[in-house]
Image (cartoon, rainbow, N blue to C red):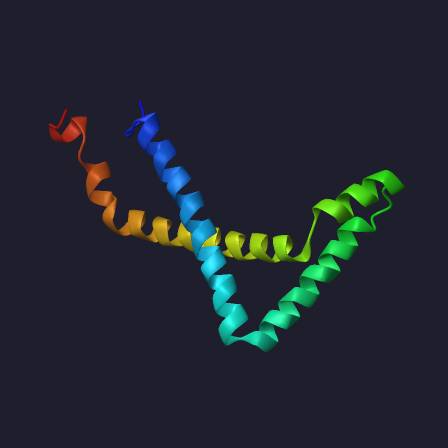
Length: 113
């Protein structure tokens, strides 16, 4: 059986997503304010990725929809959020590997219910 209830696992996952979204937005703001030259380069890269996605040989209607829905800022925010998810995932993995071993050793074998 699972060691945690489904509700706790859902809340941990949701909290991770929400925290990575908030931290991603903060990191993007940090880059925009403190590293403007690098932020301009990131914006240019996001524009190039948007253009690459939109010019993939779609039909005219599909390309119009993609260009309308996909913006450079969205791509930039998505990349910051993904980086924050990676960092948080590695941090959680590190914390669980350091502090989670004691929990796994205890169980029915050790006399705990």
